[in-house]
Length: 252
Image (cartoon, rainbow, N blue to C red; front, side, top):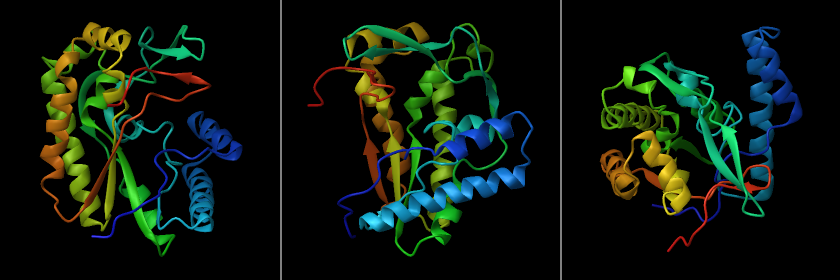
């Protein structure tokens, strides 16, 4: 299979007109059809930038997502905003700076639609180049487990992770069926799990940080091994938001 040497790893910068439209759509001021046309415009722009740069595989810039990992919450019932659900970042001076996690798990997940099928089908139709899609890793969804709340949905964190893995396996099967040649899993939590501060954040949620990387790899391999003719990528990072990072330590 042909290797891809350079491609877009995650979200491209969302233009102001898309951010404004998403806010108007969320408040009911913009109809679905009008909002979709603006999303389409933003994706078209992302495709054009990548084609102009000469890369040989393109992504949609994750323009249809609020954040890179938001599509499960958007495509299902089971999540909502919860006060007090926060995650720690660090300023460039190393000071802790907490931010809210967008949503928390409040009930058993019930799917309303596919996570990324719409994204891929539109992307595939908009370029003659090879295409890729990104999905959060299973253990990325540890972020959304809220102690004292999420236990009403699943008896254990392991049951929750198993269900998330099933959902992601179904999504990969659909993307492969639709012809997606390259799927990237995003696993920033793997980088976090080498940071002592963040290990304790996961432990406080009820996870075992000393096992999460190994368990996460097993969950991913259980999906990836089913598709030997599909290219898979793994993205690990230390976070990047508003000149803040989420973890420190050596990748080795």
